[in-house]
Image (cartoon, rainbow, N blue to C red):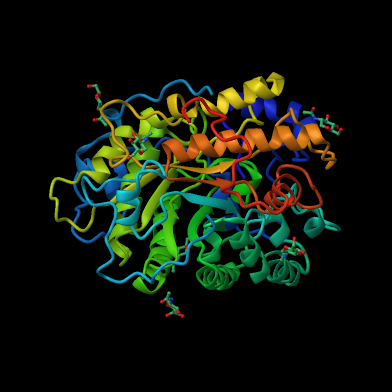
Length: 498
Ligand SMILES: *[C@@H]1O[C@H](CO)[C@@H](O)[C@H](O)[C@H]1NC(C)=O
Ligand SMILES: *[C@@H]1O[C@H](CO)[C@@H](O)[C@H](O)[C@H]1NC(C)=O
Ligand SMILES: *[C@@H]1O[C@H](CO)[C@@H](O)[C@H](O)[C@H]1NC(C)=O
Ligand SMILES: *[C@@H]1O[C@H](CO)[C@@H](O)[C@H](O)[C@H]1NC(C)=O
Ligand SMILES: *[C@@H]1O[C@H](CO)[C@@H](O)[C@H](O)[C@H]1NC(C)=O
Ligand SMILES: *[C@@H]1O[C@H](CO)[C@@H](O)[C@H](O)[C@H]1NC(C)=O
């Protein structure tokens, strides 16, 4: 997951870890067992240097269809051309027809992105549901020890990298992959009214060269996509772990240094994304795969990734994936790195408003935002009403596009959020009537806000280890919704925008 929003939140995280959830502190990098070679370690010990700037990108040898990447400033913008990042503050799945080449593509210029459910004209003109109501399949193909402690039991591993270095890791992984998520989960999600899943997967599933990472996850992704198709659920494929680690967090596969932004790592990221796009962007998947996410939660800031490089890379990766994927209706998503919608508006406008309207290599660049209310220290002291008010304000805060930007130029997704908050606090798994009511209110306020001002939302996460609290959508459905569909409202109009 997720979660660690800003540098401030990041550093405060250790203080909160014991009270908000069971997640450990960010671990220092450990040398992998049995990996003495320079290549394995170099991937991570290389300091994130500022050498990979927007202007030296032409050294990358990515070959999208007809956009030249060989000139100085790709796509007419430079690092300095972007607005400075603001201070980081912080229905039941409907069965759908299989896509065909005649499916009305969304992502053409001026095509209306449905803003809300009442906007039925555009909803029916698209093969996609008016809103994606989704959930993440966290800690399945990318392990997170706080979510699946049982898998780590008996090892001293702290993340995927170190886990994959332990004896017998491959057998344990196969066991986890084949049992943690099954077709029954898709059946259940569909019965709850979930119509989309976001599936985190690591780049190493496609190229583990020079690392201890174990491959094999892609076969499970493919199987899951088949189940999703059977049960009327759309799939967003989320590259959650990038070469060198894009954020130094456990959920990137490797806790420690942030070494993504070297030329080699950035280039390998794109090659892997092209592999994913060639496979899952093919038309035979167009009835079930709705998006590919280029990178999850790249950490931006001093000593980490630069925003300018991230945005220049985003453009390159976008064009490479766009050119590789046959399915031009795919959303190609990028996480905002917790820098906010404002700092990505110009990128979206650039990528989604190509100068040639008939150009196939343009389309739907979308921004993924992770809106948690349990990571920022300030959230800890909010009352229930304040949590609800904060959720209801998203359309005018985190999800507010600049006035000269439209949802057609920058569609938004909330790829992660949680109903796990301090008040009500369900970390002990005891659902008192107050907690049931509070969690339902906070959940409804959040999804009302997300459906008001984005293309959809994805709960983090479907399952949460042995925890039966509000991190787990399973627990929410069992306890809070108790048989009702997720589209039902117990508190209709809880947000003033109605
Ligand atoms: C939530 O409840 C658990 C168990 O009662 C407690 O240990 C924890 O401190 C509480 N967390 C917060 C943020 O209040
Ligand atoms: C979609 O295609 C798959 C595989 O070709 C097929 O099994 C399924 O029946 C099709 N679904 C619809 C709704 O046509
Ligand atoms: C929702 O759709 C209705 C009907 O098309 C429209 O009047 C309204 O402005 C939309 N809401 C938003 C936030 O765009
Ligand atoms: C699906 O839901 C049922 C009813 O809550 C539950 O018994 C079953 O274990 C769930 N299946 C999976 C695979 O989680
Ligand atoms: C896999 O990654 C390595 C770098 O770690 C690279 O040299 C190699 O070309 C890549 N293989 C493929 C098939 O892309
Ligand atoms: C919006 O307007 C501002 C100020 O004129 C400009 O700097 C920015 O690039 C514009 N953004 C878009 C997405 O057009």
